[in-house]
Image (cartoon, rainbow, N blue to C red; front, side, top):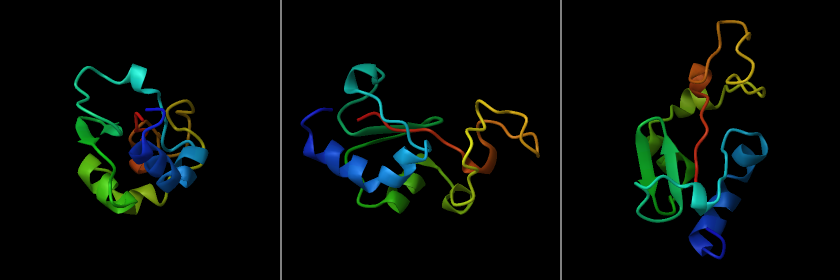
Length: 100
């Protein structure tokens, strides 16, 4: 949410993942009705509200495997499903999350 210091801190913490396309930042107006505050993160059925202390904490709360996360391909598997190994949206821990 614009003007939210916790959202700004989260964006700064996740800059590398945002720049590489692993995290998608959306405006608060696109948040689901279940969002109770900001920053709001979602991955699959897992949600987290509030500024995380670290990337590791956030990924654990969202159920993202940090082991597989570190091996993500640079190309978006969700739009290029012909990768070797029948890549799909969840392959290699690929994820998109975050509504700020």
